[in-house]
Image (cartoon, rainbow, N blue to C red):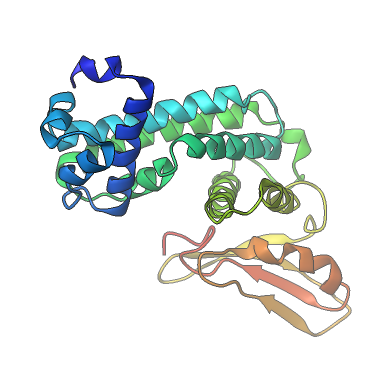
Length: 273
């Protein structure tokens, strides 16, 4: 990569970076045209290749740039300066939303890059992601205060760790959707508080987490038995959701029914399947 790129005015650097994020977020690696990136940047294709030797160099720069800027945003919002898991999650969401104001397509690019299949970049992306993800997860689990969780949440248990991991991923997905569709941040806050109730003492702390080993994989479900009734309600979520969407219904129905929530295969904890 040519160091002259970093000598450009910051606004011009940002324009080139944002153009590349947008084009790569909308196209696969192989089909993303460098000419379109140059056009959106307001520079010639030859000048773009002057700054970045080839497409792979530009792509990998965008990937590492996304990680570096995310880290800086996390520090700016003091994400890891709390021991409350859900306060940490809220700060993380705010930091990422702030970053998207300057780089609107940065996370859409990151998501597509993670699933990219082009052999020249796939291994580099996956190996780097594993390293960064593992380090981040270790930091989070070292920071959080375990005493705030329900007594049946044991973070040394892989199931419980996966539950927290998917809560984080699912919350970010919903919050980004609210951001992209112009919804206010208050909705992201309320969604975060909603997720919190499943892990901190509250409405669902009496539910027993169980699994069924099926031919395709393991299905996770949660049950609260009412020994005084024979009727049962099974709550089933739709595509892209998981069992947490029904947690507010539990206090209302559990007095008159046995309640079962479950993660449909390929959703929530019921994966891989």
